[in-house]
Amino acid sequence: MPTGPNAVRVTERPLLEIFHLKKHYPITQGLLKRTVGYVKAVDDVSLTLYEGQTLGLVGESGSGKTTLAHSVMRGIDPTAGSVIFHDQERGAVDVASADRATLRHVRRNMQMVFQDPFSSLNPRMTVLDIIAEPLEVNAIATGKEAQERVAELLQLVGLRPEYMRRYPHAFSGGQRQRIVVARALALNPRLVLMDEPTSALDVSIQAQTLNLLKELQDRLHLSYLFISHDLGVVEHVSDVVAVMYVGRVVEIAPTHKLYQQPKHPYTEALLSSIPKPDPTRKKQRIAITGEIPNPANPPTGCHFHPRCPYAQALCSREAPPLREITPGQFAACHFSEDLNLKGVNDF
Image (cartoon, rainbow, N blue to C red; front, side):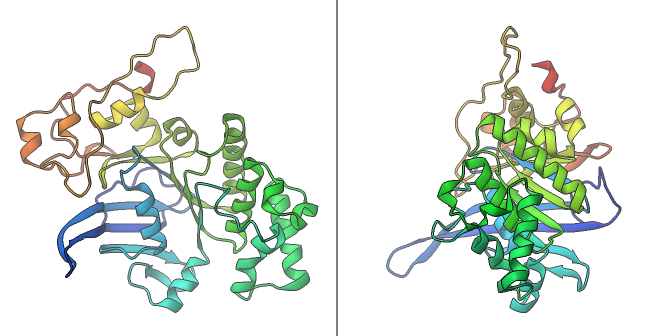
């Protein structure tokens, strides 16, 4: 079983189970391309996502969030570990080792919304061609039938069907993201991976997009793996939040627990950075010194110890395991029980 918790189950059925997933990129030198080290982009991550649940994944840039998502989709091949997707027809399928035919079948139920709607749409294709493409490639619908399905999807995401003859350049950023979502929903997936879906949008459009995603989840019974560096956004949409740091999960808990009573110093520092809407309130931000370590040469012991204000000698010697601190709340910190960390409302 994964080392993560089974908290906040919308149903009792797991949809996606990640077991000890690793993605290491070799570093080579010389004419013979001799391997001299590895970039450990994802380093032993285990997570469980239940049907109907939104699992938020947060952390600084370079923490391995996007690499994890691409490994789950098998856009890149994992170095080690398993990614079990519970398919309605084929049962438990290990995406990490599935053959080409099985992978193609499973991917109909696993779709991805990319970060930048400007670069994820082909500027030479009309909206009709963009959204109909997965239908045609998977031999689900062509011609008039595909056109009717595209019109239905556009209405579903709040766009007018007559827009299908236009090209991507004719739309705003928020509208393009809706087109990307419509394309992801074309095959009626059960799981949608969201890679920073609102980061390229302004604040007012972000709110509209998030409300749309919540509405679609309720209507279509979707599950989301939601990746973001914006903790305010993650709090709004997630049932469970996992915090990543240098390729590892350092804390995972139900959203309300993690935001009110964090058990890892890195989580506390991230919560302190969330902007407050009250301009008269003085911000008490925790400043983390230094930068996120190089995943090719991470610190010994706890990867966070060079930047942690609570670090002790043990932290530099031994890597803390991800363990249950309170019911349903897991953290990778030697001193979680002893620390009195601040929640989001304490700053």
